[in-house]
Length: 219
Ligand SMILES: Cc1cc2nc3c(=O)[nH]c(=O)nc-3n(C[C@H](O)[C@H](O)[C@H](O)COP(=O)(O)O)c2cc1C
Image (cartoon, rainbow, N blue to C red):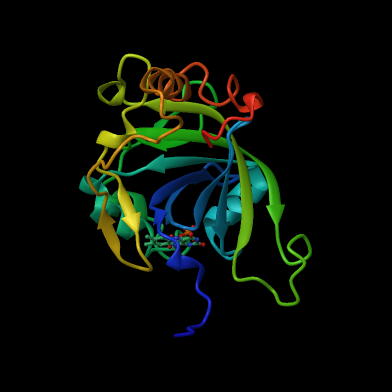
C-alpha cells in the first residue's frame, strides 16, 4: 500500500534543546527530528522550524545544548514541546525543570537529564543547500559536540551506560518506552576480538577517533 512520505516514520529519540537568547533568556524545547551525522568529530543534526525561538537563539548565539530526558521527565518534556517561549514565557518554571550551567561553555542544561551535550552550530541547511523546489518546513541545524556531561550514576568503569537509561522514543507523535536489550553488535565471530572492539568503541577515551580509520564496521 502506498502512503504519503513522512520522515517521522523513522523512530527517533526525544531530546530537549536548551538555548539562550541574545539577551540571556533561557529556552528549553522538545525536539525529535534528531540524528547522528558524524562520529569524529561528533556532529549531530536537528530539524527545527525557523519560527521557533529555539532556532532563532541558535542562529544568533551559534550554540545549543542537547539534553536527553528520562521517562520521569515525560510530562515536563511535553510541556516544553507544546509552549512557544514567545507565548509562554514561564514555560520552564511550568515544566518544573531545573537549569544549570555547563562548566566550560557556561551554556544552560537540564539538571535531571543523564547526558547533556553542548554543541557549536557548524551548519544550517535550508532550501538552497538541500536543493529543494519548495520552502522546507524545517531547517537542518548541524551541531558539533564540544562539551559533554554524564551523571555519575550512569558511568560504568570506562563507558556511558546508555543501555540502562530509560530514555524516550518518539514514534510518529507517540512517546514510547525504550525496549529491553537484545544483544551486542556483532562486529566479528571471534568473541575475544568482539569484546575488544566493544570496549574500544564504548571507551570514554577513544570511542570514534581511534577506530574509524581502520575501515571498521562499528559505525
Ligand atoms: C516530542 C516533541 C518533539 C518535537 N520535535 C520538534 C522538532 O524536531 N523540530 C521542531 O521544530 N519542533 C519540534 N517540536 C515542537 C517544539 O518543541 C514546540 O513548537 C515548542 O513550543 C517550541 O518552543 P520555542 O518557540 O520556545 O522554541 C516537538 C515537540 C514535541 C512535543
